[in-house]
Length: 190
Image (cartoon, rainbow, N blue to C red; front, side, top):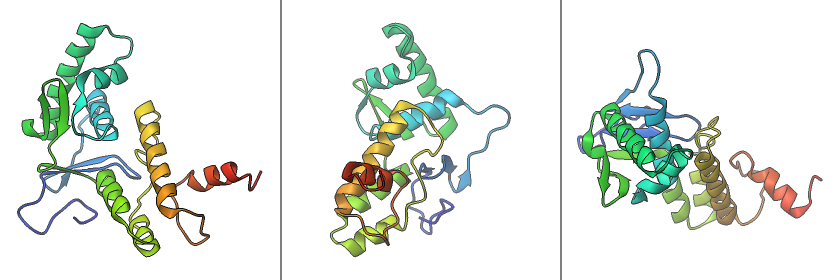
């Protein structure tokens, strides 16, 4: 996949979602743009689903995250309406699947940069491989988004980087916040 979301072959996913350093949805090689107001709730549902791993996420947990003040029925109704809007936004009903109270992004249709980054980092076997993966890091997960599920995902990414790097190296380019947390934990720079 190229940085613009295009692919060289015809077996590419239809939808590419960039979440590291930016939030952008690319449909069939064309970035999604909005005339007028953006569908905020549909995009929040997408970001919450991605942050939760995108596979088998319970409707209840998504509803609680997005509509914490709503009672069960109202939250579920808001969820189903927002899911419909998200599917329409993505121009593909099958991109977001709902089955037995669980929601999943279809990975045959969608690719998400943060999942690709995580998979590559988990698979990195040595320091050079970790450095190579970190060189692809484009910035914090959903950079300016203050939602709790986004912050939790950023923390998980920082923890993964910390575990994979094992120690602080001056030439290692870490995601924002990792160096500061490491310094605080070790008492350096205080």
